[in-house]
Image (cartoon, rainbow, N blue to C red; front, side, top):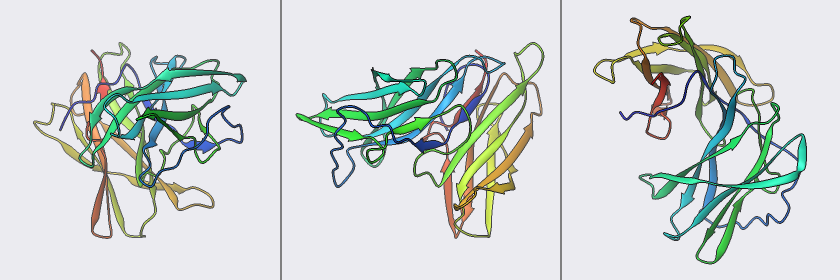
Length: 253
């Protein structure tokens, strides 16, 4: 398993919700194979008290042109007349032929971020703007777009903030069956060894098939770095949230 390097303190995945504010000039060009689509977005916290951070996310892009340009057009809820563009950066190509691109936008005044995604390739412009509704990502809760399984976690460090004491959080998943197993796979030594821990059912989202499961893992040593992923066994199938194959990383450099 590979290492995914995140910054200091804790990482939280956030629910993607719709807003009725439309992006100016964002014509939604639909294709049969969705040339560009949001994978997830979330608020990433940099400081122990949660006061600083940014919004970030991953985008799946079909490789229609080696010279494509992928842009996120965004504004903040407190100032919806001030739209800006930020370029996404290529990360890797997946086994299904899609490319993963990453974007980041700053966080202002704890305000939710409203955005849509634009891909320019072969003289065409493709949008993922949530079917004309745009996306809104906030500082609070849980789920990435179209995921069967997603992770929301943080960790507690000791007083000097240089060793991890525990990681805990919530997993959001689609309730595909009443019989299921939800586990977190964790390593403290770069996968020389690992531990699987059971998550426990916590609650259900009202008027949907989304369930929240909770997990809590106390570290065995005092590691600086912990890597982990989540898996969900249901109906004879195992679903993973392993950060698009890179695993999740919590720790200090």
